[in-house]
Length: 559
Ligand code: AMP
Figure (cartoon, rainbow, N blue to C red):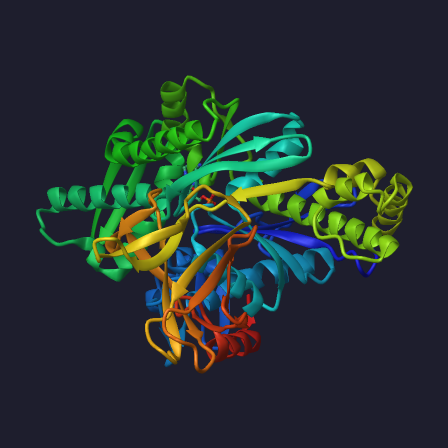
């Protein structure tokens, strides 16, 4: 492959399992096995003395060294208060995720005998601005160039499209992973993949099904032994139960009953858990996913999408028969179980591959006309305006084909647009007409991105030095909401030029880019002074902490 056409790998950084894929020389997405020869790696990190162990061994070590093992770190991404203490050091979620990434990358490099530098990482559609930023930082701490963060359902839809080759259609992607649930409607066309609506729950996944079995086992143990003790408070017993309930749950996807044994404080009991009982214990969890789906369908209807053509299931937890049966009953459609463990990583790899080809193509075309080409949609405008001729386009494709070894046809199919929506509303703290503090939403949930919003603020006194803006994120779709329904994601301090009179207008521009990242700029409208903005993002690792995490993570060996 030519030096400029760097391969971009796809990484599914999951709550319970993670994986990495690439697109091979035949244009096919392929999973890369880890050093243990598994295609998925448990997202579990064990801090051993001077090494970090990730994966199955870390998962098994949780029983012996519960204080040194971190699981489900994805649930803490973007959380300002999360810190894992190890050997007197405070470790943030981004760094822990970076170790998972390093394990995937190291094993992939070994397997392919090729350096992995550029990646596309996926995150739940439901992730807000800080969680996305934290995911990007995790990649950077791991020493990677993160070419893009894309939504897991979008990645799954891209993989499905590549597999099904159905040109047009509206698909619902129901993604129930280990720790998160996403439901997304996607319009797949010949040359574009467009997200219409998305919804879900950051804290709902296979792990919650496991927890229900664990609580049930506590009751069984108490009944059989006559104790009142909560056996989950014993770290050894807890780790034992965590491993056995997940095994039991997976067994119940195949069989009607599964035996489970529990040992605690020298007492051992055995019980048989039936699928029916399991489904009864977890029915309300499944109900929540159905409620989210109905809510999302209502929003989609308002956006002019009253129906869908396919219902696809991704995420390991959709293997539970109760999920498939319930969906069929509720929506009168047979859902397709599509590559639950691999669709996301493969979709990310295909996306990365298309990104590489389209960047190559735009770069070569830009050379011909001597000016940058920002978007693929530009190209038809350029042809229309006679700034470029069809022959130039053909020549550029030919050059990319020669540089990458990809056929002309493959390059054409790679020139696909992906359009997303924001999964959250975001706005600012302001006073309403009744002088009450509220959140005024500038961008509403499920708005297409990129989106640009401008808002004017006014100085209150002569020679005011600064203005502080609180930027808030929420799940609601109303313009004005009470403060309590939103969370702070940023504070922006605008440093004003000297000698500005009171009541001067300052226009602030918020840009939510196509990846859902927020950029802020401001000008003083009277004199046109540009205003410096200091954005505080305490929820995401920054500056010194970032550098420290990066150098520490590079010093530790990852197995
Ligand atoms: P993912 O995040 O997509 O890798 O999904 C992981 C979740 O899927 C975990 O909660 C697993 O326990 C669950 N899972 C994987 N395989 C099965 C199965 N056969 N039956 C039920 N749940 C499963």
